[in-house]
Image (cartoon, rainbow, N blue to C red; front, top):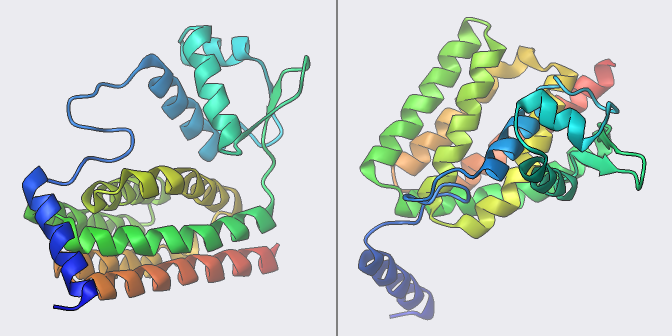
Length: 242
């Protein structure tokens, strides 16, 4: 047996002994969402969807009042959002929603490409039958939303698709590293309003889902590469149209 085959066999035995892949980075079965997690989720969503506009000046008190949570969980959420590049803190002057820099979005896509292919390939190897079915369903929901011209519903299913792939991968380390890059990409999508490529993008997601469903790790990695290349090309076109 080759070294690579032996390594694959050892990995397979480890997963079999564990019984199932671990859940994603913020969901681990029995764990419940903390107030800080909730604050992060709500504020991150408002930044990504531009309800909190780029450059908007804020304080912890503003955010606490806006989302109806205490300042302690908001402070913890702010620290994470600063680390993710979504908020900028000015000492003794509050904070601001980070500006959207097209070059930063493109660089984030480069980093995202490497992580996405690792996660997609791992999902192809480790996904349960239920997870494979859920991915195909999510990709179908994305296509349906795209065909009826509903970008908000499309993005909701896109986020669910990303979560399902990450959960199926069983690699919370890669998923944690990827999460802020996905947030940046979604924020860029809302900012540059790329509705015109939704149908094509949903078909790229369907190809990823099909490869994962077939258990073909190499095909899943290739489909992921194709998807990210499509996203990058779409962003470049959006910038050219400005």
